[in-house]
Length: 59
Image (cartoon, rainbow, N blue to C red):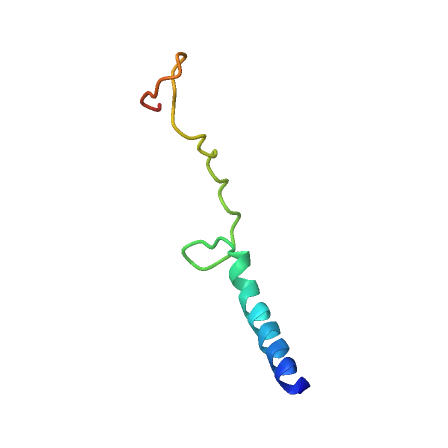
């Protein structure tokens, strides 16, 4: 009865270990060497509005 549980646990552990490198996502240059990742842009704050609260073109 514990055999299916052990099999499920082992397969789950295998899945977690194999996904770990994908989560790191290091930056590489054209030659494949690790480099410092560029900073991400400022987060977008949503639609732009003027002083009266009307939607306007974002700058």
